[in-house]
View 1: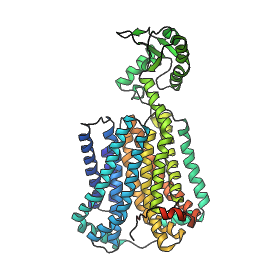
View 2: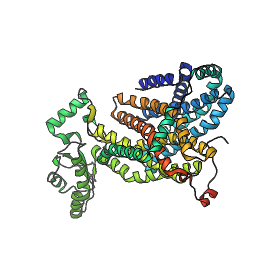
View 3: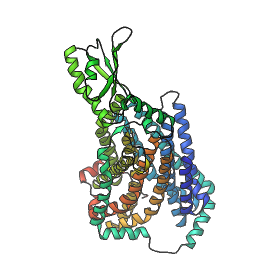
View 4: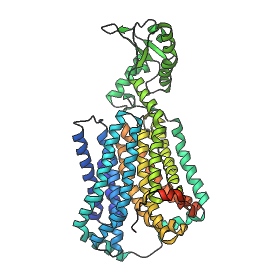
Length: 522
């Protein structure tokens, strides 16, 4: 999957730059960054526990983000060369402009990932720290290794850039025409785009969290065949039993369980060696991933066992892999609002400081949430409903929070890159419509190219045999696709046109208190 994604990315870069050397620089930067990050995590694994699915996720994010950051800087570098700068000056100016944007965007991604710590789930905290470290290393490589590579190959790249620039015919850019078309009819463009995203988001309302088991494996695998044989011979609940523990004399536990709707059978209670606890294994009538099994776990914990405990004075606990999966899913669902509030709040505050506006951060947060919900809707449609040949089943419990953290940060990349150019034109002309047109014209091509690379890298992981990586790859690819094409090309120009000068409004009292941070060169 990684090889297919890198090959597709190389093809896109060659088509964009027309040179194998120029196309290879962003890829080389990303590969070195990912390799360094994996090495650091390998060292850290001797002191900390690292989940076994962490390295593939690091590869997924590191390759996409690494190429993205390096491309943004390299594109600005080529722009400076076309304007007549020598390679050394072009490198400095590219870092002074796009480098600041990459640094800010990388910090936003890291903040979003570290927001997973607010969930208080140890298994996710390790993954969040590992992926945040990957983003940090890729950002550092783009700001240090890439300039060094430009110093080595700068002369050759300059000759190729100037040669291509001499052959180009001056014409009005397609992105400028697109921005003008949206600005002429901003309301219809906004309504159609938002309606499409909301429609794609609708399946996410019925998302069911859980974990894949052998029942989601390929039908040809021996694990799936054994799973199906057990379910056929002993009932679907045999693959996911519930372990009910009595902290004392089990009493009527066995009888109570066998009389409970949704339980097919239960073993007699078997005590521990000291007799302090006893356990009963209960087999549901439904499969482990069935919604009815989830309801059964809640019924046992909230109704059946508390009622029995009141009569016997014994405490009862429900465990086992099926119940543990539900506990994790419930914990994620309960803490998700806090996580979203922390990530959105900190990111909005950073945008407010950089662009000195109240409405720009609000717009960015709402649009990012819209693209994330649409991506989750696509995952639900494919993997939960079993569309397009996928095995139906619940969505991996940690996928929504990881998708949110990563996509929210990545969406800020394009937001910062586009809005910074719009803000630069606004500072020079004070014409909001002109600023939006020129900002989209200057960034539309590179944003689309960067998004295309990330899409092919992420989508390549759909080819992985691992269901979790398939969901990750599809969710990230859909989110980037919608963010780059629908949000940045249609919704942002429409909203900015409707807001006009008010887009840059900031209360005077707040303006005096906020520090001044500039992404553009003075």
